[in-house]
View 1 (cartoon, rainbow, N blue to C red):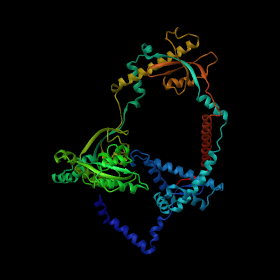
View 2: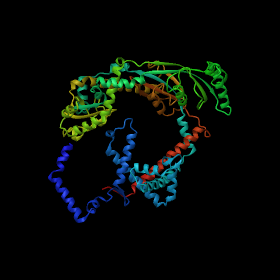
View 3: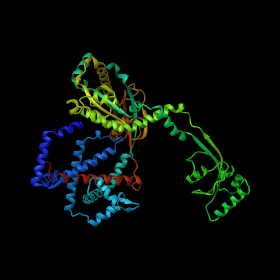
View 4: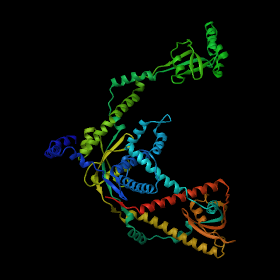
Length: 617
């Protein structure tokens, strides 16, 4: 591909373009070239004020970065760029409308106000103080100039003043809050009886004619979706590592490097710890003098050490490797010979005298024992170094090639095949939405190009092409007959249960009892809240949707469950308690007022938007 570019640069068309540029420069100067690009094209005009393309593209980039940051595994191929551009343009138009409204209301910030806001923003501070370099760097990283950032701050602040003023003006009456709490905390007394599906099984029959009719009426439901058979190349770190050949010499060298790490040295230390205070030097001198006079280190530890736990053991700390103790303590310990006592060592715990009691060294495992593990480590390390390079090569080769065979052969990779991939995806790696979207794109599906190289996982990339396309087609009746029979059986069973429930409810409302109807006994539930999930959400939803019964009366309802029909008899509705001085009441009132304020602000935004003159090129 790169060679093609170099070849074209030497062609006749390129020479003509260069000649025209030279003539333009000689006659009109550089402005003839640059001036044509110096305008500020707009993407929309709001009440006569432009939204520039540069501002639009900058916000599109920021919004794309924000959406990527919200992904568990950021993947640019999963972004819907058209939707992002539409959302950003709508947002900028709304922002322009609100900014103009703020200006009409005389809301503004002075330069001093802007300076004060910026210097107080923590993201521009170092050690609690405003740092200009950090501010300028952060603004440039957002694709903005300092002046542009200040103007954006000014606009957003005054718009937020309008939003806050309207949103905080939302009002809700105390009675509305109380009524909502009565409903929210309401409980109900009710009874339930269950009608099983097998009680209507003799009424359910599905004939071949029923199946044929259902098939003809719902043919779109029995379409095999369009699909493709794909050929693809997988580049993975694991595959690269498998193909890395590690020589015996490299293995021996790596083993020699690692042997010192694999060998373990543990040191058994004892210490005497004293507090770092006014008398520390004198106390330490006394201990050292008595040690020099031949007294036992262990006895002196028991007498002087403030580490009471080890003092009871004569100062013994046991065996430890490097990385366990305070750095100063460790440095002194590993510089001692067996039986030697250190000079005083200061740490955050106090002042130590350290004695090395014993050294234990463990030899590293042999090369033969570690060979497989070390070969894998070396291969993985080399593959990691090569992955980015090979990935770039594969991307270029696949872009320029008319197939996948030549890139695979050049890089020593395998061309694989996968069939039956629909627009909803397929087996891995075609469970990746970005790869599937590429596979069904116009260029790949109809024009025969390879997809771009798509990262489908950590250190795994895929490039694919369509091998064969299969248009959507109707499934034969004999293939779906059993599926239709099962669906019709479920449907007719449900209809029979609904008819049976309607009949039972009519009889109950007329005064019949469940015993007279041969239905067994009611299951009673008292004082149940709407959050009770023991009976399932469908039953509780039905219970709380029934109207309040008259005094001494009942209200009946029914609801389908998995394979049965539940009939509900509502006996009593118990209003929830309301404490107007309680925290629950205050929180709900505040929440409802906030919702009302936000609703009013959205309505205000919509009013301004509807009355704005917006032009889009």
